[in-house]
Image 1: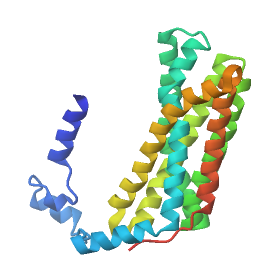
Image 2 (image 1 turned 90 degrees about the horizontal axis):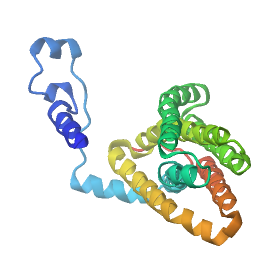
Image 3 (image 1 turned 120 degrees about the vertical axis):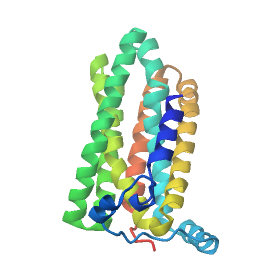
Length: 248
């Protein structure tokens, strides 16, 4: 219900340009100035753009990376609460607070990731400015997940998962900027394509965990965390393989 309210407010308030808003006045338009907006894609241009995106090695690498990213991140919001209660013996309320703490680090990662991406782009150029934040952040995620099976303290485990949450969202601003770079005027289509693969990864991850528990038997929990670590590491490798190229 809250989401519907926010969507309605967004629909009423937000426009592609301030000049399109019915409540903007002449003084505001004079202050803002005239912006040169891009024309939306027509049907022919959209078809051509989709064909170009499907041939983009960079976009396919990024889509594969999003699958792997959401396998790792999805564990935090699906199976981690169950793991804390059943395997670590914490109460449901305490487990909820731990999860809130873990996800709060992701909020910090979103903000820090924007500064990281901007700095890397200024320092190393567009390609490395996008690739470096994504690949380095997911390498840290891989190391943090690899430490989880050996964390004897529950709070040590929470710290490892908080680091995963932080670094997953640390990579997101570069990922979104990458979509704008590659997509050009078809940025929305590129972003939707990559996000679709990310959602498939999250769905697959929710089914993967119980399967790993069955296959691993007594060592199922170790197998789960090492698989999540491998997914994060593999995602970092796919990011390194991406070849940045500006879209039109």
